[in-house]
Amino acid sequence: MAITDKIYLKNHRQIVSQLDTNIPKRVFSGATLEVLYSGEGLSKVDDATRDRLLDFAQDFLDCENSDDIYTGYPERKFINYLLELRAQGLGPDAIVDVMSDEYMVYAYPGDVLSFLDNSVRTLESVEALADVEGDREMLDEARRAKKDLVGPR
Image (tube, rainbow, N blue to C red; front, top):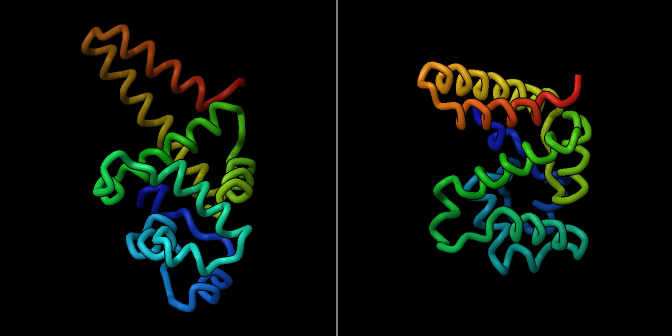
């Protein structure tokens, strides 16, 4: 299961109550995206919630082609966001706190840790393949990215 399948709406019950309709708790569910980010859905929630959801929409759902919203584009942008937070030196608990404060979404720190660990393992595989292929540029890029994820020791 991808990390984006484990990103949830904070205050889900309150939001569902304000919308007067049921939506999945998962942020990247098609039904959640459709209801929350339609003009009518956003107009029903309180101002503080609307501001954070609009920030989320602007940062992750603002696609050049509106059909891209259903092709994994928002999920890829969110994954990059998580990796950038880790590159800034934040641990799983702090990453969850930041995403919660900025966008009213959350994940469990253990899921974030697992995602980061899998990302490091993937980069190690890229390093090994680049070494076998003799691709120094890719090898160096994978090492830099892994160093950003692992952080100082």
